[in-house]
Amino acid sequence: MDSINISENIVRLRRERKLTQEQLADFVGVTKASVSKWETGQSMPDILLLPRLAAYFDVTVDELIGYQPQLSKEQIMKLYQEFAAEFAREPFGKVMEKTRAFVKKYYSCYPFLFYICVLWLNHHMLAEGEEREKVLDSLGELCEHIKKNCGDRDICNDVIVLQAIAFLQRGRAQEVIDVLENFSKPYKPIQQSGAILTQAYLMRGDMEKAESFAQAGMYSDILSLVQMAGEYLAIHADHLSVCEETIFRIEKTAEVYDLVKLHPNSMAGFEYQASVCFGMHHEKQKTLEHLGKYVSCLSELFSADKIVLRGDEYFNRIEEWYEELDSGGITPRDRNLVLKDSLQSFFHPAFAFLEGDPQYERLKSRAAALR
Image (cartoon, rainbow, N blue to C red; front, side):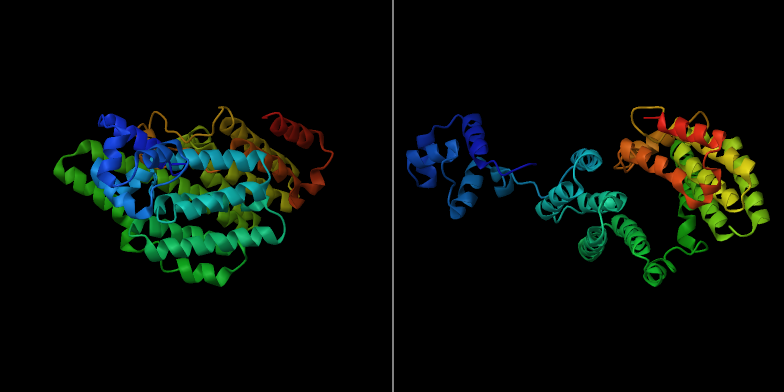
């Protein structure tokens, strides 16, 4: 995966077939000294000899030179996690250049390129000034390359969403609308595909598959409800009564499904938005109440060494579903970066009136102690 290693491969293939250097040299039409130099890395076979060598060893030219244009799912996720960890501890520019080099190396491995887009999107905020916009521009260009050349419709659809998020980060609202308005209409028949597929499995008598898809659909829809409700709070930030009703309904849903344990990340986002809403109206006690819930969600989220998505006794098939995902349920950013952003969230202008309040300071200390 890391480099062309033709020297080692020639040695290995020759020994596996119990051939001498002289026998190989005679077949290819070179001297024994030439083969010796190939194997010790002092020189490389002429490019015109590669097909003959590959045919002799009954391998492809790619296998002969050790070139892998495609990465496995495991290799992709290993690289993603390594890059995410490096972004958390090393200079942004250094890691960015390293990822760009891997993009050039695996420019036709579209699942890998998709995860590079995810990586850049989740870390571009670490760049400074114009560099941040350059990263988003690179992300957009890579998305276009994937859309034009990748034959996997699922990857292309996911890339459309990533591209729209990048446009949003640049403040290019109209381009987001152009990309997503028709694609995301909630009443489109395609949105019902999960329920239809579940019915088909039931019709076929495959209860296990039906249960798995039904659970995944419910789980995903509940999380979407929480996320969209957070956006709804932002829309109605000036209408406190609407916000209070929304918060009441979502927290009842969260209680029924035990969402703080099931998916603390989603609930942390919602509780934070609720606290911002109340803070904007200087509702001190309610602001502190929801900040307290936000910190409790963070505590649940950071309770393990790794932030990993999981199921529970009711959603007992969800972890199987996560395992089928390329990410395996691993969150897109390094734990330390997530925590750093969480601590920065206390500096929102809506909380300025709380500075110096003992309860507020205790909440900040609780969050800082999660390290």
